[in-house]
Image (cartoon, rainbow, N blue to C red; front, side, top):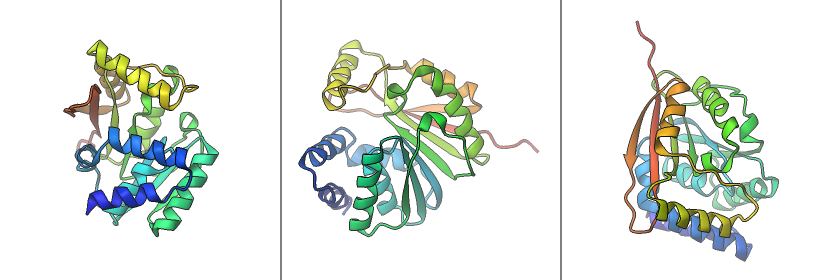
Length: 218
């Protein structure tokens, strides 16, 4: 059933290059990984996807969680246009897309949860802490920010990931953060943070951070 959702999402894009990219992204973040991440998302309520790209994962989480309303944000106008077209073709109406720079995100309203999948290593390092702080401000007490990224260790896996990043987006800067750096930045933004190991037969040093906004003390 969920594998069929992935196939239908990929088929919603006409451009063969984009479709190949979709296959590659769903190969890297396969259904098992998406469901591992998705278990931490609420079943209902507004969810923010920072750096949504072509909308692949927001479409997946909207299709598998019809009670969610997902807002995808990305700086690339073409990707946003294709995400909107794919959502319309699929008849998924609990997702919207907005062209905006995640680095300048101001946090304009409360959301139940937010996520960033392989985004941190693609944005300037000095913009990450302010972004995390603004996302913290959007969440209610107990709300969750999910950050999936790659670790800097072991080095062979990091270099494999770098090569693939450059193959898929050669002009996009890459700066990988160590697991300790990401966890420290999340804590500095006010989150309680834990890691979820994502074991893969492929040589990717995946790390998922579950960052929870502390509940108000009585």
